[in-house]
Image 1: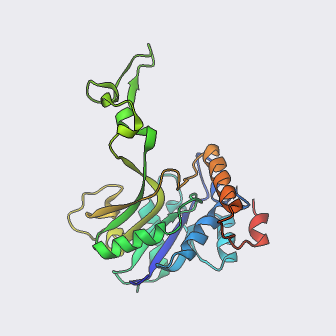
Image 2 (image 1 turned 45 degrees about the horizontal axis):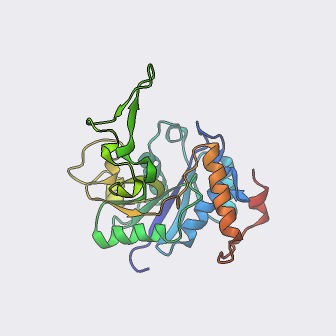
Image 3 (image 1 turned 180 degrees about the horizontal axis):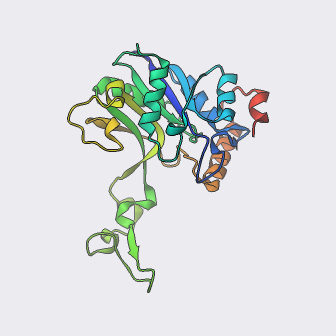
Length: 261
């Protein structure tokens, strides 16, 4: 892929309210974060991969894979710390000479399942459109907003979430208009956007997305973001199925990865 090489920042906090130790939990025979690190290294558009973490377990996995580690301070590792603050800190540690034109790819360590080429598609769109950010989106399927309802906890009464017509009058999934939700597979931003230097952007948690925000679409179920035990089981099953497929190219795997729990 032509263009400016991107820098990938893999974010991996030690703490987690939903599932303790999820970033280094075993998924299909290797630590969860190792899958994301391998995806980043396999992307043609990425020239450098850095892990931002406060977890010794994650730092060891990264170093064993010859990937640089940025020690994340505790104030950027709490459950109220923002993604962009942690990413900015990592970029500052990478070096002040990172050009403004450099795409910054933010990847989450707890997303072991993403389709091949998703990272490169996001970077390509960022560069070709000169937008501020690109995020991956998945179709919502049967969890469509038109099928969202209010249920009264007192008497069980059901009514539409908005308006007067339940389900917007649509009762077949194929009749629903396309709708998408961020799936966590990839987030790519310009350095200017990450550093909040894009003019005319309203303050807020997503201000670092800039003004011109675009998306790439992944297939339903192609990205798994692990936040619960159920997510972990789904990711484990999908990756094992992929590894067992006759069309699968077996990924390189070291003994050290499989030893880590």
